[in-house]
Length: 299
Image (cartoon, rainbow, N blue to C red; front, side):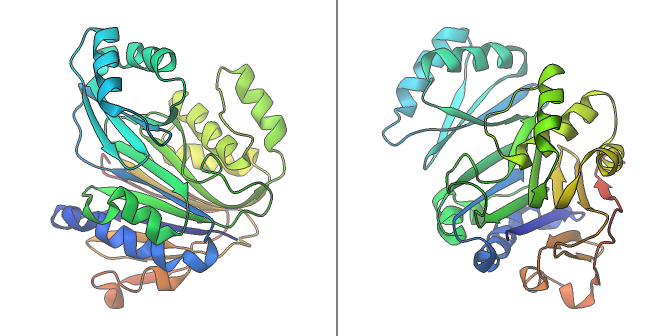
């Protein structure tokens, strides 16, 4: 039993408030997932810059890391620290070199996400504490997703927390359980993907990354998932411009959505949406099973 929230803004005037609304939504889902929490926020970015978000151990020297990374790739970088996470922003044309260098100079750091717009944070702890530690309420952006976890099949670890990201500016949060993830993982590994955990939700993220790499839109990739993923699931996924929702054909996991002229919001329960502006006038509905819901800012 986990909690999922998501908010996709249509109205740019709301972008400075994205993090504040997402933080309230995340905390509201505490009862569904008090073990750990995480979120991904899509904010301002530039096509020639790449953000590399890392989870780092306590005592990690971000200043020394910045100096060593800049020297290793012979390029200017910007490094910002948020609690246990570090965001290194580099020129996109040296991003691959930066990732290789990070593996050498900071093997204790764990890659959280890569992208022009997305930053991804997650930790063990109550959702309100996790949001506060990373300053979620002060973040702005176009859209974001969050997850509160109640571990039922694996240990309570940061690595097992959601969201999962397996591609640039791509992330997924999941409530449910996949029954065919081991076979699918082997197939995706043969296709060149790699995984950091044994979590079935990371396999779902990798599956969508694979489909997107083949040229499918997020909406098309979610349609494909209905044929290839087996189990109980509600997914909320994000790309740099898109926001999608999918439930399994049985629809056994809770889900509710609200749409206005200003935003689209998702919550595992309605109370996660109840504090949003104008929600009393929103079209509130339960997403249908085996039906793809997809919004894209680039459309």
